[in-house]
Image (cartoon, rainbow, N blue to C red; front, side, top):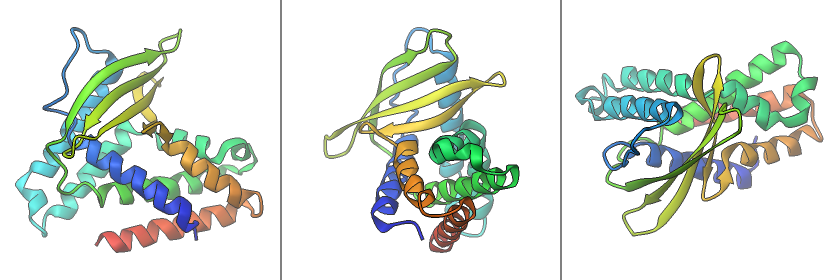
Length: 216
């Protein structure tokens, strides 16, 4: 299994991400001209929020279908292959194509299941857009925000996005300057230093199944 220490930290990051994404719309002040990257982020966050607010989400019988919709939206805005490549680090190139696919699928399942299990009941926090930093080529952007929680605590959150195949996709999230990708990469590198890729894949698959079971 994945270690408890890293697992707790990753879970906290995902829980925070779910909470923060679920309050991104109403309180999000827009600049005079929003960038395409930010427009993309807001578009999908609004669609996810609409799924959560829908009466079908409150109904236990129809909630699974709504969660499938949310998962589909998350897959469109989050590039899980980039997440997988970056968390595997230099060892990614040693994976066979089959291992790359199985690892990407398992990691996506883990992130999605953990995320979707945490989206219930988050609203009311205030968020302020504080800026955007882009590379020279305008192909990578970091959307920066500050979340004000109910207790007044301010939490910086940044969404790293890249232009890929003509669309803006998120490939990392920083919560209080802690990178989701870096958090997992540290753990995965620890595993890969003593085990083969198939062992890592098996552990991630097992963790994803455990998260799915706990979410029911």
